[in-house]
Amino acid sequence: MKPIPLIATTAFVLAIASDTVSAQTAGATHEGFLRPPVFLLMPGALTTCVISCEAGSSRTDFNARFQTVIPTSSSWLSFVAGAQWGWASASAHGPIIFFGGIIPIVPLNNATNGWLTISFDPLGAAAGPGGKGTNLVAEGAAVANIGAKLMPNRPVLRSLGAYFLVDQQLTNVPTDANGRKDHWNPTLIYGLALQIAP
Image (tube, rainbow, N blue to C red):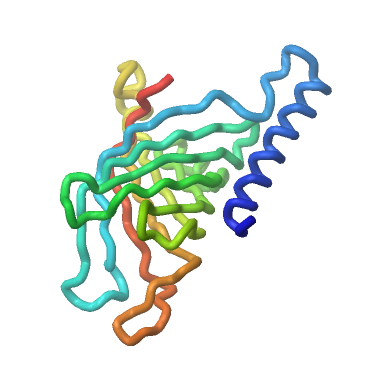
């Protein structure tokens, strides 16, 4: 098995095992390690070549993103899986699926009094046909919790947030114009997030 699927499978099995052991030791009233999933609609934009590409090669396209977050009993870990697609333009990126973990920076998030959520997200990402398999991606994420702070009594809008993601591919690193591997050429993903279920 390749490294990325192996890591993802191992993490999933450990999460299930932890949940089973916790449930057996705590009895029927224990909620378990995994919490119910949260489904998010995240329309926005995706920008490539913002740092080290040749001048004029930066590109921004609409990005339709759907994400499922599975919280855990730990404030330091959640699991995530989803898909995104630049379907508004024929030359934009095709479907991409992603999965992995969300590791919130809890002290920093507490310092913002709930206005901002910052996390480090180790992810696996795979494109459709023509892609280079599953790649490891390091993601830095920041979410401004606009709805929770400004509209807490409005059922639909209280989950509204503005997100900004910096994604750096760590495996199958693309090369620059001189044929050298470009290890610092992140993709920026940003927009609005709205919880659609439950």
